[in-house]
Image (cartoon, rainbow, N blue to C red; front, side, top):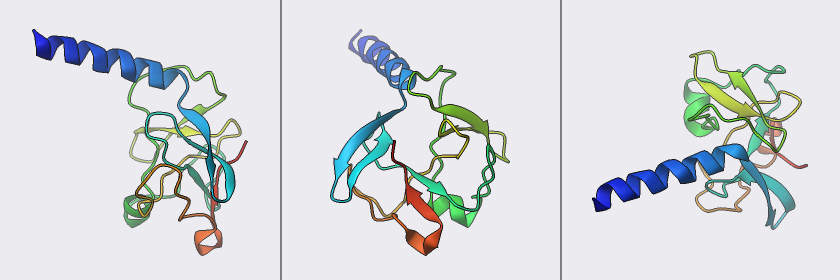
Length: 124
């Protein structure tokens, strides 16, 4: 019985998080956009085309995509794009796919900001 209650709570929490996948958080470099469910900073890749992710393979291991795990409708303006492998990924309202930096270990870290001259933190 306890296990069922926990599973039900998780489903409700996951559904709530999907309604607003991003939030603004204060960091050492100012206010940035982060994943609502983890507080981890989100980034865009300068080599991506609008609505299209070009970060795959080794790139995606270092820069994990912010994947959609349910079929929510975002109330924060985020949209969904399809990755080359068919998975769905959150994107900015103008179609830039969103990623995490594997080097960020805690919410609010921004270690990937400006990396390689092609990775930017997301700001509103």
